Length: 304
Image 1: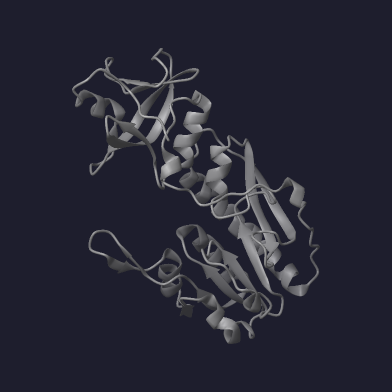
Image 2: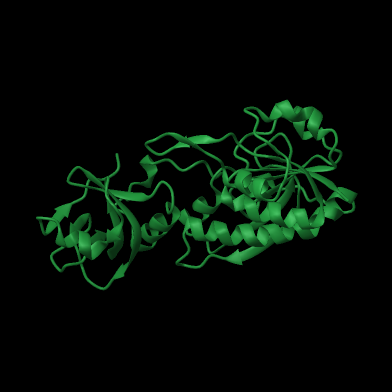
């Protein structure tokens, strides 16, 4: 049976670990160190560690993955799914068949850390998953399998990532043995078609009232669940978790609550903020928040 080392950290990687364990021997699970979270700064284990512990798998949490070169010499192939750290070149060549990566986009589109969010933010109609052989570049290695799907207009980065994680795990399990045997065809990426998907920043999550409705709705979905789209309302940051088109007219750049709903005027129409979260408070319906403010209409601050 093929011996595999698995590198992954968030919940999106857990389905792949489960699927691989059905078709190969998982010799080692490598994940990021426990991190402090919340106000208490209590150390919290990553989801992959939690799952691997429950399944009785051997776990390593190195600060630098390069420390594991000797461990990799004894495996046939290493699999990476959202590990969150660069694999050094010396480690890439240690397993007999190198490293395989499950990437949540149709490469070469959206290379980088946030492919799902960038696809939604750009208004892409389709996305998918790709299986590739890792090389020294950023998601530049040859691809050997893909799966394509339409992006539903209501999907957020969180829900779409979860869906891609499931189908990607199945694709990985179905292709892993052929890859390990060296019988699968590798296809070089066309670099001229590449687009980059850098990590999301809180500053870019601010919703710009100068954009149109389609862009605004994509924006809200793309930054859900992290870091959350937001607007600046009279100096207060309000996160926007859900929104929809509204059949009313509000002046562009204004937030209006006179009707009892939270309505934002954009360049080509209006959206209703269905779910919001004031700073330091719980999530709530937009209409509930609107009833608690003392004004009827305000211009929004625009991103700098």
